[in-house]
Image (cartoon, rainbow, N blue to C red):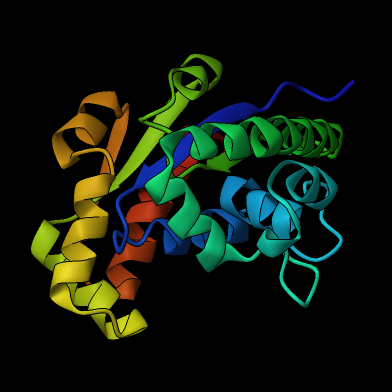
Length: 203
């Protein structure tokens, strides 16, 4: 019978380096569950959510490629908040089922630590209660803007709007059991910080 692994929530604002830290932990032997990737897979062509989205919203919300028409849906839920709740009621149970299945498989495989990469961890009361530890990747808002502009081509105002829509930096830090500061350091330095943390997570 495999030992019960440590469940570690990983979160941070856009451009904080959260995904990089997730990959560094994965390289050190952690299991990784990417909630965002699971959600995207549900709404991709052939995804589990597509039949329900078509039934609830209509053919206009399914693209020619068979995936959810993201921009059409984004505009719709922005204009009609009730539509967001309808969409979430379709996607969230499917994501939850897949997360549970992946967690079971990683536990059976004997992983000492399972990292849950969850963008909205702080916003969701559910996640904080089910995770043993929360690791927050932190950096300044100015660094976030700089990084996201460099990688995505968005302008500063758009990045700032995205940051404003996420949980505040203060709220994330208040939810943390451990904070890793990823500001003004190199990737080599970041990897060294992850190494220091890893032993606390059984890695």
